[in-house]
Amino acid sequence: MLAHITITHMSTGEAQDLILEYCIKNKPEMVSASQLHEELLSETPTGIINHLLEKISLASDEIAIVKFGESNNFIAATDLTEVFINQGGFTKQEKDEAEQKRIQNERDNIAFEKSKIDLDLAKKMLKEYPKTKWMSRLGFFIGTVLAILKLVEYLGLLKFPN
Image (cartoon, rainbow, N blue to C red; front, side, top):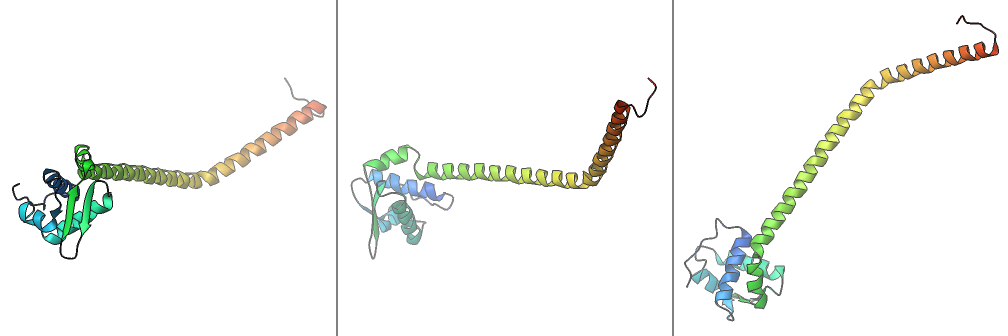
């Protein structure tokens, strides 16, 4: 028999892995939720244990066999239970999901910062636009005057000293 464990400071994945490890030790027997409550998780209400069994059931039918009854729920280890636990179990899945969320949040933050910089740049461009517009008009005017002078000089209508 295992020592009574409290899951208040455990993640959901760690609690699910604890249940699966208990099932592996009792393989091939079906373990009831009340048995889990009595022998493993005495500090945990049976409603939470049933919720954990439901989450295990929803994860995959191959990880464990979970049967739901009117008065009690049962769970048993399969051949894949031990393999699943050895590969990290639900705890590893939780950590992987947390890492994916962290990476996604980082990407979102980078995209947000980029959009703020783009907005600042657009504001600066709009602020500078009137000056740039007048400078381009002045440049066009000077270019046109110089082109006309060259044309007049080419046609010989006006002589400029060398």
